[in-house]
Length: 190
Length: 62
Image (cartoon, rainbow over all chains, first blue to last red; front, side, top):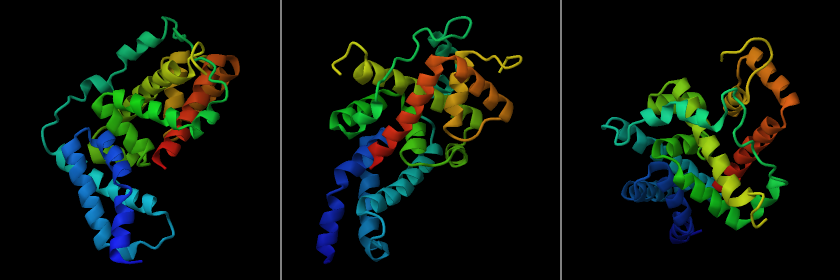
């Protein structure tokens, strides 16, 4: 394979890499920079691509490091969005009655796995992710998209494990509700 | 969690179920959740939905 073939194959994943970076960083300029750095690193390190994993997986691995670097740099700057609102549980209690029962019990989603093969479902999922508050989205994608473990995330963001589980809980509750309303709603289209 | 014995609320069970997606929870809490799930269909659905969400995120990142 020639260098220019490799470059154009890498470039074909640019839009995907950018979507992941924007979701993670919530800053389109910074996301562009990070994707640019990723592609440059991929081209200069082309000989380290063994072909054992797919090119997309390999590029995502590089992107992961670049995003963590960017978050780390930003962590040293004053935080634009205060984390406080996203690390408390009180408002989540509204989802339960006084004795701790669900106000609106989770609905029956039927056979949700069949949704996974549908492109529209992934669009709805992405929409739901975009609606999360910025820090919540960042932490959730570090966990579930970048597959970092709890200890790594706490270390990177300098937050406590309690903060972490509260943020992840908030993210999951919001995503559950969003998917139920927009995809699995019993009175919905499906 | 402010609970005595085996009974925990859906609120506390849902929190524990989320934590279980990221690692283990202490055994006594784990047992309370298991017991709660035996009795509570809503929380069984919630657990299934949390597992599905994880699977959906795996698909999303591919």
